[in-house]
Image 1 (tube, rainbow, N blue to C red):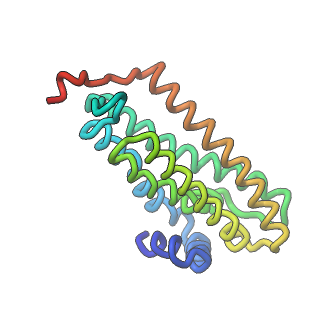
Image 2: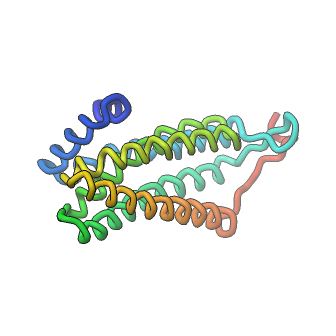
Length: 204
């Protein structure tokens, strides 16, 4: 897992070739990567919201209770797993238009590795803040887009023209899935679970 992580950020072209080979030899080889790295945003957000909190006005900071932060972390973790699975399904479905017939497992594997920048960006959750989160999300989105456009043609062995069109379609669907799932998660957390804040006076 560590080897692929480093290669995705240093030699992404070579990383996709290695990942494709391993997925062909061992279906679901992506699972450890997905299950472990998807924990990063959840754990960092749990630590950040319970230990540091975020500022509402001036220097005053608000934290979540341990129980509420745990619910948020678990919900975020499950949401990321669901998002990768949904994207894998869409990649598989859209492949009918092109000269390629990847398995569903291969498509989910590609989505899992392609989402790595978002997993790593989750480190920003250690110190919750609007601008830090925005910068981390934009940086992750930019690099995930780069990985998509250079990785999909390699991973699915597509011609350059097909790869560009396929990657563009996946990017558009991915943006819709990302926004829909994150908004749905936040609404569910607020409206159903209900966050429990710790009063500033009790933070000591």
